[in-house]
Length: 122
Figure 1 (tube, rainbow, N blue to C red):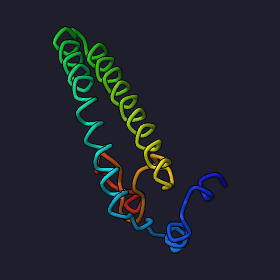
Figure 2 (cartoon, rainbow, N blue to C red):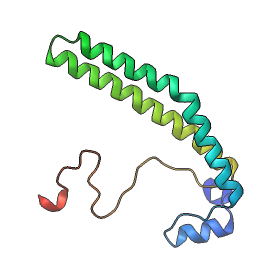
Figure 3 (spheres, rainbow, N blue to C red):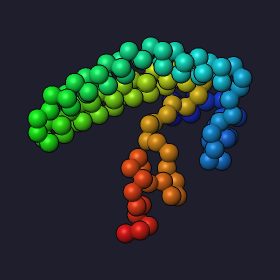
């Protein structure tokens, strides 16, 4: 309900039709600036995660150790993505736009990241 109150009537009508709300030029610019700032601000953190993962894999002596490296770096990257979503949702809220849930894109033919066979092939 709180999200519905934050949206403009035009955005609400657009969402009810199943689409994304139309953005004003000011909203587009504000979202662009927030995304650009995030990329610049998080660059060192991403580099640190990758460097740590590289060192971990280089030091791994067993398949289990390498698996632990992948798990650890994956968790760090997911945390980074959550931080990005929180920061961008704060901007979207300030602009009167609905927050993104982070559930990703869905729809017919979407298979996920690995690109393996979808449920239709089972």
